[in-house]
Amino acid sequence: MTGKIAIIGAGPSGCFLAQALLKAEPGLQVDLIDRLPVPYGLVRYGVAADHQGTKAVTRQFARLFERQGAGYYGNVGIGSDVTLDALRSAYDAVVLAAGLSADRALAVPGGDLPGVFGAGRLTRALYEHPEAEALPDLGPHPLIVGNGNVAIDLLRLLAKSPDELEGSDLGQGPTDWLAGSGIEEITITGRSPAAAAKFDTVMIKELGKLSGVAIRVIGAGESDDPEAQKKLDALKALEGGAGPRRITFRFGLTPLAVDGPGRAEAVRFATTDGEERLPCTSVLTAIGFDTPGDLPRDALLTEESGGRLAEGLYATGWFRRGPRGTIPDNRADAKALAERILAELRPDPSRPGADILQGRDHTDYDGWCRIDSAETANPPPGRCRAKITTREEMLSLARQEDMQ
Image 1 (tube, rainbow, N blue to C red):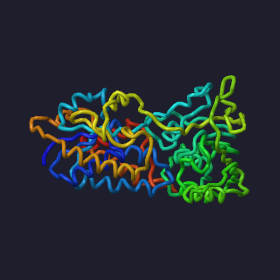
Image 2: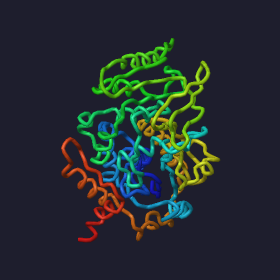
Image 3: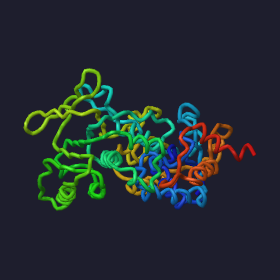
Image 4: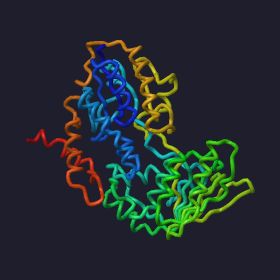
């Protein structure tokens, strides 16, 4: 089968979909389009810097471009450089795999006070996203609202000693920020009982390897469900330690308000017994993600059915499902969507496909390889790469072949 398919977003959901499409039909033209100069999205800028095993999926994605013939068009913004309507006219099918990168707001009084920071904002800065804001001062007692895997990732990084970041790709700036943060105690809270918390047990067990912490777990309780009890047992196994940095887990706390005359100083929670106020020096929210606004997600998903939004238009990954599921979950989602796209595809040879992107200031896969080589050629001691942190430097490296 021939046909031209554009995938907007070169993160894991987009790459898994391209793999599935080209495995089933090698004759397709499949192009991945991303607003950043570099591919891999969530894997590069969302997966924790100390989870290099998870990041290794990019070696599999490299084969997508090197062996399966997918095209890569980076530094292309939808709306600013090319419109969605133009892409739909140029390709037989267009798939939205742009993910969700904006932090969901803490919708309580005071939720927008200075000192309230979304987990996405912090992790983008920690992982040196080119559009990240500066790393903020969290003070000695940050409080995390949320206890899913993103919250646990953030907690673990904030609690690690410099030596425990060996082998990661955390940059020098974030490393210095963590070392000088002055954090003494981190409180992590969740609405649900511990047995229903959203984190994976393996993430909790990883916290047990931290050397410089003392951990308390308050109100974990018991469960009749064997799987839930495994989660509770993992939590209880964390308790103890004599490190200088304290971690406290709390459950069954629903945020009511963030207090402070000019900056977050405490969070008030509803509990089963009434209300409780927990003082803090900053509030870190890890309560989900939303679209940043460059694609009107809500309007596009109005008629969504099994990944299909309209004729020739589809969605996959977090953009379709919301911020649920892990990277492997995206593989299954992509396989099912690939089958549907291929069943409905009606190739039109007159469509220009990638020709519509030519002449724009985009990066290609070879350009990404030059960036990747520069980052991994001579990393600092204890690190596996030194990320290029600005769009300008990425583009300069990507274009070097063109200037020779």
